[in-house]
Image (cartoon, rainbow, N blue to C red; front, side, top):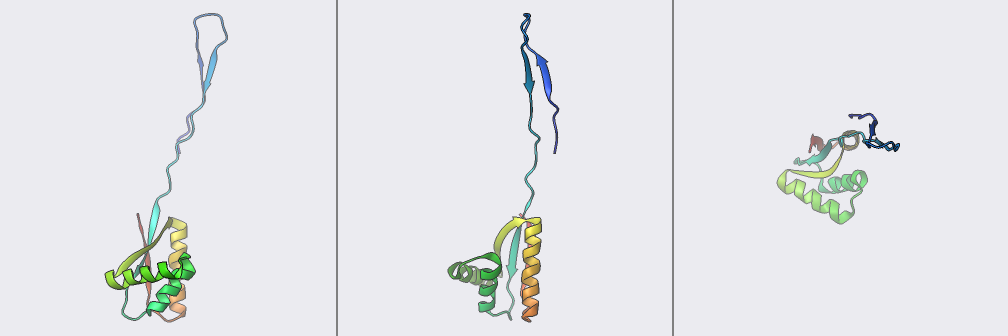
Length: 112
């Protein structure tokens, strides 16, 4: 973030008091976004993947079924795009949930 100080300039060659205060706003960058990806495996049931998508990514059953088929057919699918902290949390939640249910489902994140 870059801050620019206030600038006071004197405008006018006459005797009037014409001063202008110019303020500039700080320039901030948007934080980078991260894609959360689900990876296909030969053991995790399709119904479990649908349940994960509904539970952790707030998808309805039609959306989650479509994404699950994409994962199954293409081997990977983007299930959401988030800030780093949220993406990291989603990946951890999915991985923990899969391990507790003894499924090898893999979830990762990568910068967009």
